[in-house]
Image (cartoon, rainbow, N blue to C red; front, side):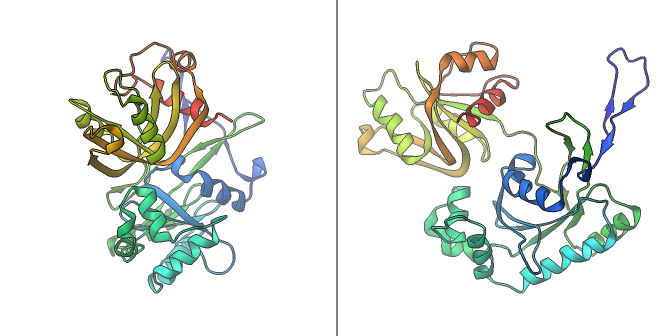
Length: 337
């Protein structure tokens, strides 16, 4: 329940009016399709959604985390019931008897034009060396986390979940609530998602600027081209080579060119390496691989950045804007045509 609290602190709390998916014309399938596209934004950038149900006994949504563990989601537009647990447990049983080629088939069925195997895509998505695809592929889907997502849940379901958790089954209810919004939208309230102490949901990923220009280096333009070509962020010299390594996997990274603005964006991965490429005059670099890399054409200008951020700040080699300024700039960048 979400309450409206008066700032005066004098009036009693007022609960927001609860709605439902049906009231807004949504079916379970529409919720499933929406989560297939936006589960990472709603839950975590540490999830790679690989499939959704079509026909037969299949989970509504199937995802992998960075450790290769499988997340199976059963979605309902109504309140949770104990029998919903049996559905997702059945899906886990089917996946448990399968092999990597079954996950690979599911992944390919849900991609418009799959050019690589699930194992290779997994390595590239999370920033692992793709040469480890065979080794990593053998680990995928060995451990399961089961999630039943419903519009609230009853005591019988909670009691059943507690029973299975006591018997070491990774299963959790994930109750959501729909609240009235505007004529164009509604509000979705989601609690944090934790299973047996493992947190998959998280606060919004931090936003970092990485400056691509190096005034004192002859190879400044080459360095910027290198980042764009290799879809990475990099830093040279002290203290920047240490600061760029402290950018966590899943963070939002924006490549910033002096006097131009943001020229590309991406998500930080686990992949970091030291290099001294000849095209950069053997300058020793600390590299950070970015996934979901997207050049901005035209760039988000310096004037736009400071207007959206609400204040002027100096973009050093690696910096993190204060408050929610970075999140606002990131939102503007991803919403560009």
